Amino acid sequence: MIFKVFAVGVALLFTGSAESYEIQINNLLYMQQGLGWPHSLTVVVGHEALMKLTKTATKQNTCEVITPSGQSFMLTSPPSDRYEAWGTGCGLRVREVHSADTGRWRLTSTNSTQSFTGWIEVYVEEDTKSYEAPPISLLDGEVHPHLDLTSLDNSYCLVAQPFSQSSLVSGHCGVTLDKATRAVQGNWNILVGLPGRVKELHIDRRVQVEAERLDVGYVYDSNTNRVHLYCNILHTKKNITFCRFQKTTDTVGFNVMEGLSDGLRSYYGDGFVHKQCGLTIEKPTDQDFGTWRCSVGSQLRDGNTLVPQTPMQALINVPVHHNKASRLRNEAISNDENDLRTIFVQENISFTIPCHAESSLTYCWFLHPNGTQFTPLPLTREDQQFWYSGQSLQVGDCGITFAHAQNKDAGEWTCHMGARNKLGLELTDKVNVRVTGPLAANKKEIFVSVGANATIHCHTSNGNRPLEYCRFLSPNFVGINIDDTVTKESAILGRYYFTPERYMNQGDCSLSITSVQEEDEGEWKCAAVINTNSVESSDTATLYLKSDPSRQWSRAGITGMAIGLSCLLVILGGILWYKIGRPLPSLLNWNRRRSSQQNINQRSFDTVSYSTNNDVVRSSVLTNNSDDSATAVNNP
Ligand SMILES: *[C@@H]1O[C@H](CO)[C@@H](O)[C@H](O)[C@H]1NC(C)=O
Ligand SMILES: *[C@@H]1O[C@H](CO)[C@@H](O)[C@H](O)[C@H]1NC(C)=O
Ligand SMILES: *[C@@H]1O[C@H](CO)[C@@H](O)[C@H](O)[C@H]1NC(C)=O
Ligand SMILES: *[C@@H]1O[C@H](CO)[C@@H](O)[C@H](O)[C@H]1NC(C)=O
Ligand SMILES: *[C@@H]1O[C@H](CO)[C@@H](O)[C@H](O)[C@H]1NC(C)=O
Image (tube, rainbow, N blue to C red; front, side, top):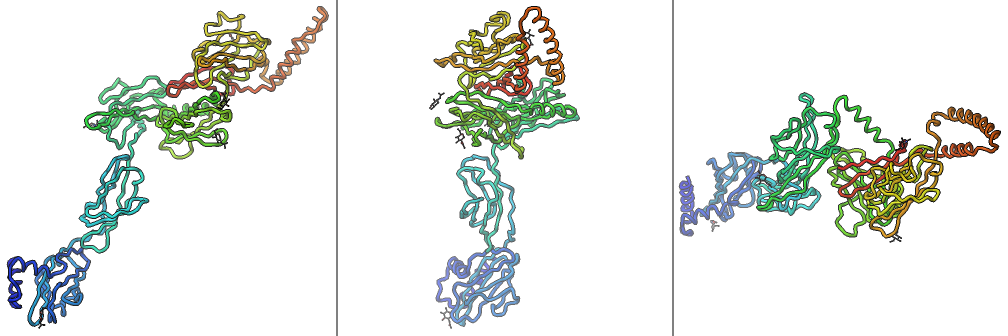
């Protein structure tokens, strides 16, 4: 075939002016192709092909075309209107190119003495009207990721990332990023220059940047009566090293391993290899419902060493199923009553406001009593005024620590927590902050009946700090020196002793009084030296006597009893006056007590302790109906 073409070419040349050419087959080939323009042409179906000879005979008589299929015609009389003369010399325009046009096109320009022939190789390709490819997935933080944007054989492309300038890439369409961040996520607009096509091809390529995260949740299988909790790491290069689940209200957890069961609890998931961590609970009981914390340990290969990573943690809420649901709701409501935690802080010393949600959080911020908002960030600088405290947002901890408490920080703070995977209203909690001295009375006012027991509880602010000693001064200026060895049995004056289950080493200076008497009414002072201080700290609390609670049933009852008692006392008084000849002061006292009781605000403080990290913070809760101080310790 090729030989035949040579023969034709040689023959044509020889019929012209043979003497003007040095005939060498290689040169001849080159020259002949060299006359065709372009040498090779790629056209997509439906486009037009333009071709011509770069050298034509002077005073050209004819321009002859031989198509790849061997059809031959003069340009002046084309066989179909697909063909048309193009340009001034010997040039051809072919419209509506189709696949049969593939091959070698020959053009020959002839005048009376000479002729010139050249050829053009035409390749017809199917048109690429669109290009589809699956989204490109990158790991957040990946360094120098390379993105292959198309698999097309393009000569260049113009790449526009979301919200940024376009960049021109020659050759294969791909880019290398410095670092994958979520800023590159979205639809990338790409314009590709393809062979055979004048119009650039527009491609939308979706780029996803996946951050490593925990996928947590639970599945309740009512058929087999099983609860499955799961805590899987998505988009990670880490390998799981351990998997732990703990009910937040329990002190022990479960070490979950593939293939291991204690009869009720076993591994759930597709395996550590698939970065899955889960717990199956068979025949769950009431205790198994509620909030669970999962902790997933992992390691990362760095060269030849395996580097342990900080465990990832999250909370999973497993609501009680079926008839148990109503009970949980009731609990939730009773917890919702206007409980207000109070934390005692000392001026100029750092203090922490801890909040906690039974759900993983994405953010948390605080509203200062004066309306300013504070969003805590991790502590990174020494001069930072406030920072995040708590274990992590993942486990629902939302705490803020301020370096220096000021008097204006006192008041009602609100913490606002944004729950993960839950859009809508933020979770909130309120905390009362009291800026006090180093030692503070938990209740500034104590209301108690004659004959009942009372507790005057003072505690160090800013957490539990040991006391050197603890003393009280009664309203009658009787000094009581006391420590935690003074018990009910060895009570001072038979009535005053150190409150059991409170400890001076924990910052408690607490006096219990059995059978309160009238002489106990008034302002009590507690005082102590806190171990690091050189001066004594003190605070006061006022004890008010109230009437016997059994008389508060109804106003009518009280009035009736008062009238009855008054009558009785008048009679008794008359008898006594008659017999002894002097008035009764107790009646007057009783009336005074009753009137003061009407001004009594029944609210009182209860004490609650909780700890965040190593830092135990003690605070008080204001409740509406409780008189007794109770201490509860939650160790997370
Ligand atoms: C034919 O073309 C050649 C090359 O351009 C030229 O040299 C020659 O004079 C032309 N012949 C006539 C008769 O014009
Ligand atoms: C994770 O485990 C796989 C299979 O056991 C192992 O090939 C890979 O090197 C491990 N990677 C790390 C970071 O430990
Ligand atoms: C707190 O610091 C301020 C300024 O440094 C000082 O004026 C004030 O007396 C301090 N208050 C206490 C209770 O130490
Ligand atoms: C509120 O108190 C904070 C902390 O003391 C202070 O930084 C802020 O300026 C105060 N805002 C207003 C409006 O007083
Ligand atoms: C007061 O305390 C004493 C001794 O602990 C106890 O026996 C008595 O029942 C208590 N009284 C009241 C009203 O709680």
